[in-house]
Image 1 (cartoon, rainbow, N blue to C red):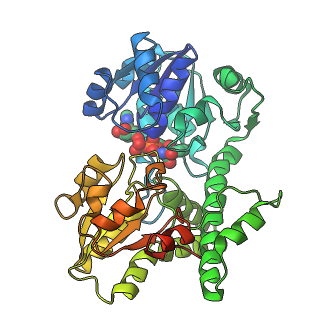
Image 2 (spheres, rainbow, N blue to C red; image 1 turned 180 degrees about the vertical axis):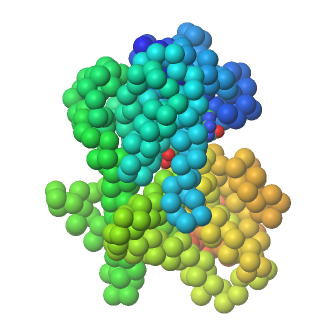
Length: 431
Ligand SMILES: NC(=O)c1ccc[n+]([C@@H]2O[C@H](COP(=O)([O-])OP(=O)(O)OC[C@H]3O[C@@H](n4cnc5c(N)ncnc54)[C@H](O)[C@@H]3O)[C@@H](O)[C@H]2O)c1
């Protein structure tokens, strides 16, 4: 099939590369010309495991091409995916200007029947808006399909190639049938293709993210309660996670959720349901808990040191989670800003997010080339992202480098016994 994917971010580039991998001809379009130039040279604008190889291979086979010229791509394709950003607007609502703008541009370039697929996360009713815009601009036949994306950054390629399920929202059989063909190669092992109306499909994505965010905030509250009563959240987590009705994933307490999806999607669902008169109370609490949790490490440091003025704090992990360079809404940002405001000096390291951190913090933070270099002369270390390479460090070397051996572990990656045995003052979450 001839496909176009508009938006070459974490979702669009992964989708484009994976769709080319199954033999389709895919044109990836982005309005960011610098990004397109990079991709044409085989350079990745983002870090995502396995993506570079996929892009290189399919580009070499000429199945995957990159352009900033949307009209030509539309005319050459029968299925067009919209994977542009839907950032948070001022009032918490999803900002739909890119999605609706692209819908108009598609309509103006149509030269026959097209399936227009919404992959961006959009409020309920957006597929209908897209349909209206296209209907106004063209007399060519078309189907609008809602196909929310569930991939996780850090494992995006795998998630796209082997999805747990594919959701297709459609109001007509023709578009639905073409989408089944598109996804057939990815669902051979039995993952279901769930076909439903567009409103349900649009809500699926928000409901999934909202539930995952709820689990995180719930466990952060349980961790805080563990601290009040002297209980150990690890024990509690294992016990409740063994219950088959609950399951073990997404029960890890920490420093709050971040990233480009959970924060904005939780806000968006609260807003678009409020617009219809519904008060989504549980999600308002999820947000409040998350906001408070992002300050837990800084508050604990202030309590430990009295004042942070003049202290040197090492930070390991800047991305909002491991295996990505994405720092959007990362808890590390909240921590670092608070440390700087309190007069501390910050020395930070992340295995992938250093270029992003450089753009964010400029020279206000010392970014070190290696993890251990961040520890030189430090009064304390804060572990903010649970990258694998932080899990088994050389504790003796750490102690030698640090001025005082104090560790604030925001992800509970170390054992309290091991830390004590190695002479560290050790703080973690809910233990
Ligand atoms: N990142 C994730 O893990 C994830 C997972 C599932 C769903 N989503 C959703 O998918 C959508 C995209 O997310 P992302 O993280 O890939 O965003 P992103 O910001 O990484 O990428 C969006 C891309 O769209 C491009 N773009 C914007 N307007 C354009 C236009 N008019 N024409 C051409 N290109 C345009 C931007 O230049 C950018 O490259 C969002 O709605 C998001 O909520 C994201």
